[in-house]
Length: 100
Image (tube, rainbow, N blue to C red):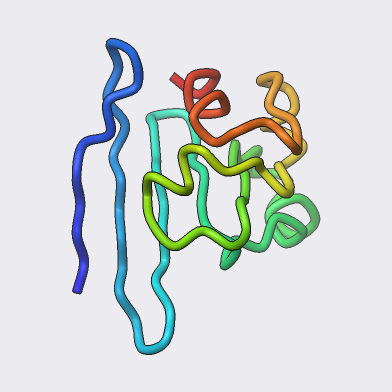
């Protein structure tokens, strides 16, 4: 099952996406500029093999809900996300504000 819902961040709105799969759930919150995602995101792949795409993305591990993704510290971020001032350890909501 796929569920999508608006995520209000200040006066802006991001899109929260939850994909329920057997034995796991994929979580993503996206803006027009980038996204944060659960531990399934391969930041190394985005940096190394897809670096020319300059993807703004960050990963939080151990999250089970979109609310947890918003409040969790980011475990890793892409090089391009760093250009937006997004760093590992920052919480998801703060990263999304920088992606608005």
